Amino acid sequence: MSFISYYGFTPSYTTGVYSRDSFKSQYESGIYRFRWLGRQFLLLTHDYVKHRFPDPLPESPRLKVLDQSATERFYAAYFLEHTFFFILFSIAYYFLLSLPPFGLEERFRILLTMVVQLLISMAQYVVTPYDSPSFFFSVLAIVMLTRQHFAFFLLGCILTLISTLIRESSALAIAFYLAYYVQEKKKDFDFSVTALKSLWLRPALLLSAFLLPYIGLRIYFGWYSATAAVLIWEKMFQIPNVYGLYFVAAMAVILLVMADNRRSRQFLLLFWFFCLPYIVYVMLFGLLIEIRLFLPLIFLGLVIALQPQAAEPPVSHGPA
Image (tube, rainbow, N blue to C red; front, side, top):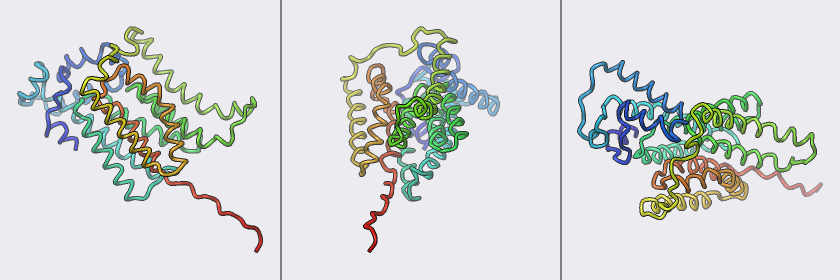
């Protein structure tokens, strides 16, 4: 699927980032400079490609249309980085679908993983160095955060910190965990000081794991353009963005229909509620035709919508 996305088609949407110099010009400025680790992953991959193929690969006219300084080796680095993390993401996603409380039957795990793989492959018309790594680390973080043992939770916090160094969408893993946590703990909420200390310890640690790299990157690189390059709210109702908005609305309706029990619907709505800062940000500053921005909402929403319904305890009718 990666090969078809990158070499069966020419992703003409993304331009001017297919050589090392043009890549740095784009991704070391504006808000992109805060997505440091994804940038480093791609540059390391390019170093590997240069070592593996010391002689320049034959140039392709298709890339020169997109970037006058484009090289096949740099484009191959995009392909290899995406494929590597796409495979890891698929394993982590399948693993998430295998574990309680999200465990599904084998056939549904396979089908759901394939559907998500197809959606991600379709969205590769927007070529970036950080989407696939971000997807992988966020899903793996959720696997760890939703385990009961505190050591696994701490590992999930570390993975969230790493994911934030790649892209700010790691906040969606936090939204997923908070929705899960509220669902699990809603019967235990107590506003006494002792209870609050116990209940808020994990959410506070997780939020710290996000805020530490988020703020730290902005201190290191400077606060200018710290949130977004330009407000494009007025572009929302242009035809391409209307298509993107329709896609998102349709997927939201489908997920609500698929959530066929009360617990799943509550979980899904809680997840969307905690995702509101991200959703509003994308609506204000994003290009909605870039459906990759909404893919975490979709593939995490599928996990929630299809989670098995908890077995109801048997009703006791007393002695016969």
